[in-house]
Amino acid sequence: GAGVSQSPSNKVTEKGKDVELRCDPISGHTALYWYRQSLGQGLEFLIYFQGNSAPDKSGLPSDRFSAERTGGSVSTLTIQRTQQEDSAVYLCASSLGSGHLTNEQYFGPGTRLTVT
Amino acid sequence: SQQGEEDPQALSIQEGENATMNCSYKTSINNLQWYRQNSGRGLVHLILIRSNEREKHSGRLRVTLDTSKKSSSLLITASRAADTASYFCATVTGANNLFFGTGTRLTVIP
Image (cartoon, rainbow over all chains, first blue to last red; front, side, top):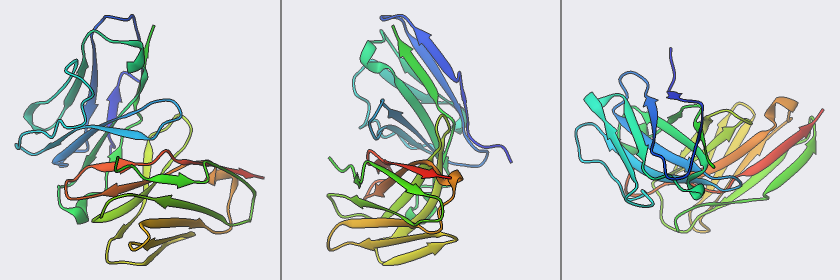
């Protein structure tokens, strides 16, 4: 079946512009996660959606970052007034549920964001 | 930080040899997971080991967990060139987020 998809695969933007990154999770997965992977670094958790619960935004690095998940499916990560340090690969993942035993996460291919 | 730390950062071996990667973490966990990331591709889940488990096998993969030392190891036996990738450990604590380490870059030379 289809996996997690993300778009665009690559995005180059000028400093100060806003960008939107999209994630389509696996159908039926109630949990959705956004991560960021900077060059040479480990993955950094950004935000987590579980069903209709309020999202866990504890990983968002600043108020320039926000995310929405409409209809419990597609999610959009928005970065406002982009900075060069925002350049990274942004990965989305989904999982069946929030229980620890069902926490296997399936990752999308990522969006490579370059801020010039 | 709850991030795990992998050791070594990079590992280069000949095809057919075994590869061992280690992961250390800082807080109590519910489970620990290993992921593989091929260059330019998304992460692929390899194996999950729960905090009450000590060892788990999946094909050529063997994972151990020592909660007293807050460490885990991933062993890949009889390595193949296709195993060349970055390997990450990730911990799950009370919340449901994964906290990843910086990864080990494995190169298997044909």
